[in-house]
Image 1: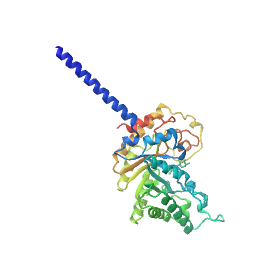
Image 2: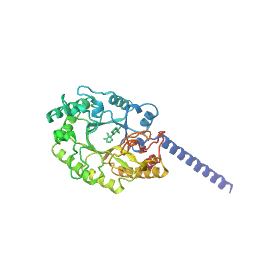
Image 3: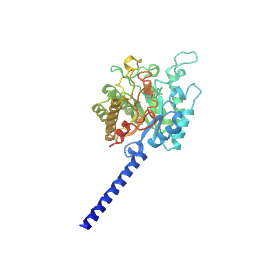
Image 4: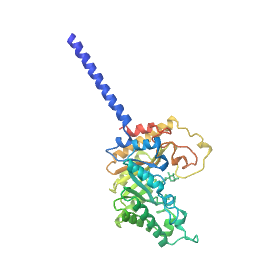
Amino acid sequence: MKFRQVHSRNITKLLLSGIFVALSCLGQKVSGQGLKDYYRSFFPVGVSVSPRILQGGEAQLIISQFNSVTPENDMKMGPIHPRENEYNFRGGDSIVAFALRNKLKVRGHTLCWHNQVPAWIFKDDKGDTVSKAVLLKRLKDHITTVVTRYKGKIYAWDVVNEVISDKKEEFYRNSAWLRICGPEFIEKAFQWAHEADPGALLFYNDYNEIDPVKRAKIIRMVKDLRAKGVPVQAIGLQGHWAFNEPSEEQLEKTFADFAALKLPLQITELDISVYPKEHEARGRKGSDADTSFSPERENGQAEQYRRCFAVFRKYKNSLTGVTFWNLSDRRSWLDNFPVEGRKDYPLLFDRNLQPKKAFTAVVSF
Ligand code: XIL
């Protein structure tokens, strides 16, 4: 009897200490791990950055959570090449230096886009539109200079961004690039980027790839380019989504279609708005007054993040990276898009840089 009592007391002690050890390990796991660690065996997890946030608490958060960065604006043509004979590498250089210091990968963004282009690029001295030959020469100089500068430091480039039209009946976006050059600028951009750094992985990047019509156009363009020997090597799906879009079915179909190309895929600009998805920019209305981060919005967003990451994990053989567009709800480009001045809360960290419910949803699997 006595023996039994002592024995059971010992077992209880043993059990309790086991539980204690397990709990403290769990505690350590939760506090010591970042997104990059939870996803170590899946894909690198990145974030878009500006030089401003590479200091203080935000820098610490970047280093502890992510293993890849993308310059949010500093390598776009307008900021980096403001005048024909003038490059401004300050921002880009500081981001690359930060990444090298902290052993983070860098995705370059972006070499050819219709937005944030410097005004000079399409005009001659007299203000007239330049010829195709002049524009292509300028594009070549731009790509060669920028890619060469970061050769060996940037492992992947978004070479061409958003050239597919959102209009069902139109294939290419009607941009100044297309009007002046025709679609040839697309293949040239990839060729010149490849010549400047044959080691960099070259992406075609676009948004609203969950729309079946747009997706089919992207896939057709990539297939046609590759059939011609153009070095389009990977596809970037931006992933500017909302709590109510895409549906799980839409996302699944999107991944299935792209994975069939057998090319690396990345989610390059992920954020999940707490407002119902709208595709066009518009002014603020009376019905936009409530911008609180209510429990309902918080939960809807967390569930959407959970659904998205479940699909990402499922497609880990195709998916070679997931990058968030902005670090925390302190500032997001969605605070001004699609509705100017409407505060959004699209990220995994709140305005105090603390993990949100959505973070837990992403790392609980
Ligand atoms: C956005 C930036 O986040 C903003 O700061 C800037 O004012 C406009 O561009 N698709 C892209 C990104 O490829 O470069 C855009 O970034 C968001 C949409």
